[in-house]
Length: 491
Image 1 (cartoon, rainbow, N blue to C red):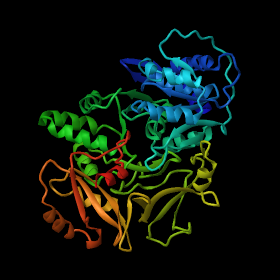
Image 2: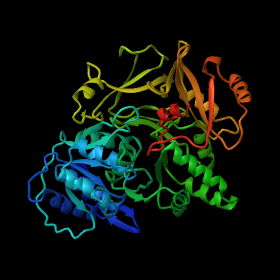
Image 3: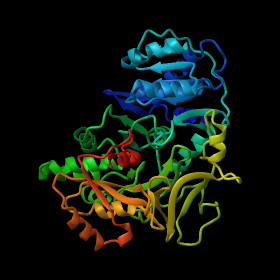
Image 4: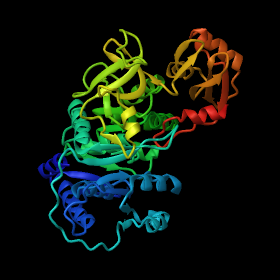
């Protein structure tokens, strides 16, 4: 937190946040977060790592609350705005929160739970009487944040990061992606996830740059902001880029030209949180003039790999290790794989999280005996660039003795004329171990034998899906990532 405060003091007159039609300077952010930190402390000297859950709308209030929790010595636990009450209750109870901060519209949703759990509830915008007090000195080894993983196979786990972890995650991106205090970024991502919190908001505010917020994603509004010329950096998930492309293609030619000219002035556009289809990358380059920078990371490590800011960005690849990150590819016994062979990504560095909250066994199992974090993702190193083949559990299909990358099959399927999107999974099968199956999104009737023949011309027979299912859309989580266990259920 110290680095954020120092940078804010250095850039006190700069605009830090633009939201709800208002602009807020770094000086205002420092003052408001200090005052709210005092309110959280309530006369005590230090929150001493009390967990503070907060369900706050994107914008100035969100950042003020986050910074106040850190400055008061608490652990910030952001809640997903779209989660139903049972999911919110699980997070609040698992984190053992003692304080709950909410925007006014979430008060009724959480009021009874707070009373039942005897949690101090603070509603922003209410008449909060605050007197500023001296704030504690926070050491870098203290816990700073708990983010809950998506929990596609088990109940979500709380990923605990220290202030040192967060600063490492931010500083490596600021350095590698050339952030400066003249940058301005638009945030359209949810703020209970590392992508929005670290890559967008924290990198901007650690650089003295400006962060603009939209309350909800809308392609037309995003493009209006692009045309204004007020931003020069943009980060999103592949689903968002897909929706922006679809909206762009619906516009009249003269509007497309205006928009394309505006986007060519951006210095950086990034994609992450899910595999970027090559077709989306190529289309986006045509309409925006920008080659999307694809990177690789996860809740437990922030970012670990990135295509270069300057230099070749390789389609279908996530680049090379970021500064301060060490990567190994290992086999099932955690021995290094041979050159050009796929292996599980193992990570070391100050960016790696400290622990899973109150889950010592899960924490121990997440690391090798010599301290490497086991990501569960499989990759191969090709000409200095890492290519993600998928997650061990859902994207690597073991069929007939072969290890098959679902992502590679998806890339080919997406080039079929009438397929808009797809997801490939492995279905349990006595004969093959797993059977390759594909759910495809299309508005047209697809002749499966014709599609199978088309695939056989492009891939070995053992990779060809044996089952197809045509669907209107693919199930996704809050970050737009396809939930493949839900795909399996469709079959």
